[in-house]
Image 1: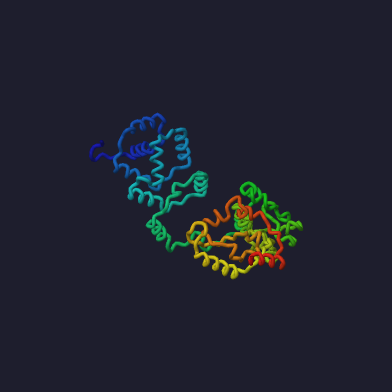
Image 2: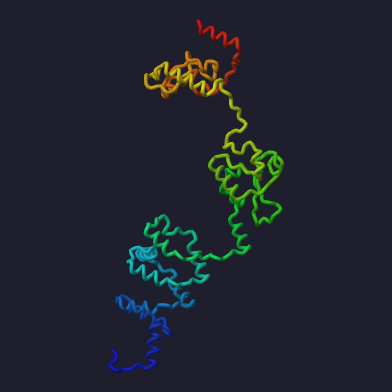
Length: 370
């Protein structure tokens, strides 16, 4: 401790500064200083002074390189790693500490090289914030903090080259589709446009309308839009044969598959031997006759069972003498019991080959009279 009134010389001050900066010190001296400082508890006041003195200071590239090399091979304990992780996640930190950290980062501008390194270091890593839902208070604060601030791209325009690069990066490639969407690749035939450079990766497909010049039947190709390609892939991968490729609106209007919703547009719908109104009259008559009671179990009847299947005996479809009321359960369990002639699966396989003639009607009516 220097005596009162003692004045340090400039040379002495310079040497003290060099010792504190550890400049022009031998490795042995540095080691001794480091060993001497081990175990010492630094007061909060001293830490604050050190922190304030280091504000605004940055390490030179040489210093950074030396620090990096000195830390190589060092094994960090699990406790230390946990502390670092919690600090990065801002867990177990007081509000004051978080505020100080936030203020210390304000106004900092990273160089392009630093941004590139940060981007590379984060590749493949899952964000610590993933899956964490923001509270309504947090959302409100974010909203208020951004009020009045214009978007960073406001007023700027992209160059044609940048637009072209973005367009190319968003395009599907045949290799990507073959690898990821195997089912789509088996259904649809694809190729790159031979009239354009391969770098543009412009995929071409066939038009679904068979009479179009761009159809598969006529060996034609056309370039679908990105939404057309996306929707066709999405539907096929779900197992739904929809969103066919069409080169124009005219082909959509002419193609019978368009608006078919995946059903067979050429399916012939067999006409019933009665109208809807006629069947409803017949149904209400049978239910009223049976007092709306199931003829099998006695519960409330909602169905009408045909003794002679409508598919095999269409002439008796509206004959109340060959029909009775039943509930839903009994209709399928007893009326169409498995293994019988009226079994639903058995009826589905059969076709009515009978032709109803006037003579057949007369004969059947005579039988009913008897």
